[in-house]
Image 1 (cartoon, rainbow, N blue to C red):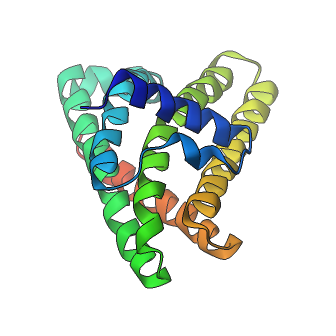
Image 2 (cartoon, rainbow, N blue to C red; image 1 turned 90 degrees about the vertical axis):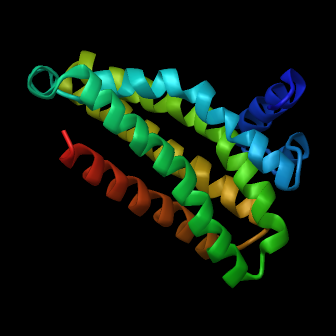
Length: 187
């Protein structure tokens, strides 16, 4: 379990990345133990994830499938997403000859997911509750910001070029969409 200090540093490092600070990696602990502790970010982001699901799943689907089933299936998908991406990235980083940097990247990526969950919530709330044009504009802008944010983290943490960082973002998008499609088909 991470200390309060490590959580604070992880969240501050995630914020520094959002400010496009290339020195943001200084705020993250490194190594295998730090990677394991960074998965606590999943617990921190989980309430936001549940709120996202409550906004994304149509009321008719809640009535048809039941809240328990939807939350159970989505929670399993949440765990799968949190574990599948690092496994794929470890292989990708080995191929890039960035094994040493991969652990720092996973740590930074995990802590960044808390901030990305907040951004996703803001975008979805804007989409749902503002005028259609304003909602789409804000949602799209925040989605692009999240993609750019993740790209910057990958480029900085992996000390890799733009193509490698873009590939990391695409891997995340494809995996996330695959898990979402499978998850949604189960309720």
